[in-house]
Image (spheres, rainbow, N blue to C red):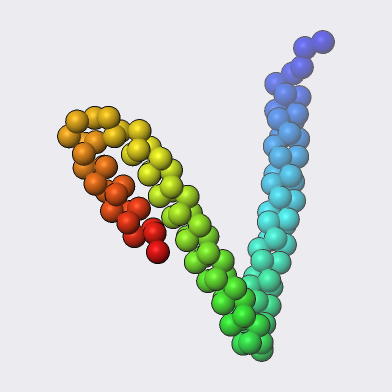
Length: 111
């Protein structure tokens, strides 16, 4: 059974109407999500103004965590770098420089 051009046009129109309906539903969902996010941001701002001690405490802990992480990360990177540099001690020119650097570090490491 072959469809007539009118039937094909009507089926395409039905398909487009279904797609438009789906797009409208998606837009409604996105609007709800946007409103929810705005409410959350507003609640966060209100909480910051009503509880400044909590805000200070959270920021203090965040700064402490960042500082601790930076310190530990730097120590790990320097240890790895020192280990890699110690492998180059046998190279004539670079090895002498690295050896002096390692001696300098060990003198300050000892009490």
